[in-house]
Image (cartoon, rainbow, N blue to C red):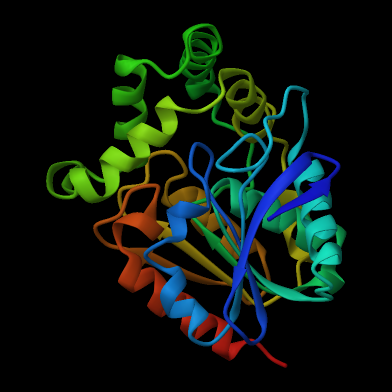
Length: 267
C-alpha cells in the first residue's frame, strides 16, 4: 500500500505479528533489499518495510528534500499505521534516517539497528566523483559503465564473483529502471548534502546495534566505529564477507544479529 506523506506516496509493506520492526533500505535499492532477512524477522515481529521516496514502488520525487524530511515522513507512516513505537532497522540511507528519527522523536524508537551507515558528511575527496556520476545519471539515466562503477562500490568482491545472478543482477536491473530525476534528488539528500550528526549522537538513548561489512567502501569501518563510540551503550559488529549491502550479501548473519538485538531491547 501507499501512504501519503510530506515526501509523496511511500510504498509500505507490512506483514507478520508482534512488536513492530520498521525497515528502511539503502540508496539505490528498495524494500526488496531485505528479502533474504525479512522471513526470519516476520516469524516473531510485525515487519514494516518502507520504500524510500523515488525508490521501488514509492512515488517519484522531483523536488529537493533532506534526511530530516525522511525522519518526519517515517513518523507519518507510523501514525498512519497506528504504531506508537517501533524498532528501527536501517541500512545506509535507512540508518541515517533512523538516527535522525531517534534524535527528533525518541519516544517513537524502541531500538536502533544501524547497518553500513554514517553520521558524518560525505568525505570531501569522494564528492567530485559522486557529482560526476550524479550528473551522468540525471542526463542519461543509469547507463552501463555507471552501473558497473556503482556495483563495485556496493558489493564485496566475492559477492560480485559468486552471487551475481541472485544478488547483483537484480540490483543492476532495479538501478537501470530508476527515475533519473528522483535519483538525483535522493543522491543530493543522502550523499552530497548530508549534514554532520556525530556531535549529537550522545543524545540517543535507544538500545543501538551498529553493523558494518568488512569490505564496505561506501561507509567503511571508521564511520561505524565512531557511531558505536558516540551512542551510549551501542554495540559494534563487523560482518565478514560483506560490502555495503550486508543484508543482501550475508543475510543469515544479519538476521541473527538483528533477532538477538531486538530480543534484548527492554520492554
